[in-house]
Image (cartoon, rainbow, N blue to C red; front, side, top):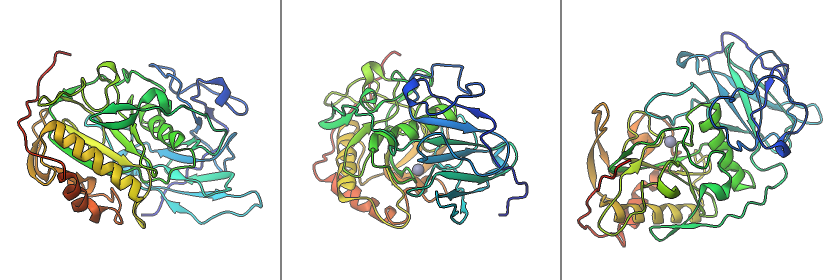
Length: 366
Ligand SMILES: [Zn+2]
């Protein structure tokens, strides 16, 4: 679809959503667009540009760019990148973001990773669009200590360790529902060399730029097979579940935002990367299998089974594999055509070490 109205973006109007002063590179102008609510650290977000025209040169490392649009009918646009020698790459079409909470979201693109060495970008999108730049780790490393906590025998890097801006997740009031299904995603953008910075960029995009208040996935998996806690809002910072699971009792799952309209009771695992043309690493697939097996053992979900999913809010129903790829729910590319054929492999391997057992989904007061 051609872009009918050209609304180029410029650095003339810049709002910088960075609370940690050390991450601000260059002058700060304009109002903080995220002044309401608890911003937390919101690290690595460099600038959000709303109007004007031309090639933008950010004040810091150019990692990811995300674009928000004025209306759901106008999710169309393209981006190109410039290099120090003055050369400019071809335009790249912007793809619609496919993850969403059930309550709706700002119309937005998937994040786009700048090519290595790019120093500027230009967005061609409908008037009223805005672009936000994120540092995917090309800037100074932040040296987080990525210690892990145990979840069902899995080492999970907690939010505080990877640097979530809002550790409590309390800007998105948590809801809890019994687990019904597990959905596999890709983040649709290649991770930078600092994996935690990539996780923070996705968190910042979902939580702050798009206004969800938190990241949309329950767990994220990097190419080395490390597992990061996503959605917060649980008691004591427990990943995925309201409280830590114990054998035979599955606490309800905190609702996240990864399959719009079908999020309650749906656990979202997202692998860092774009698997349209090449699959994830064996380490990432192995960690995903470990997650699926552990979650199925805790919840009683049969990894090879089928379910009739029913959203406890609104009542939307869908016959689904219990463990699926995002595109099984909705028409999109997620988790990438080079990865999607491995969904049965993941189910079958998760089933090794899984056994049917009686699991009650205890309800807890909130
Ligand atoms: Zn997805």
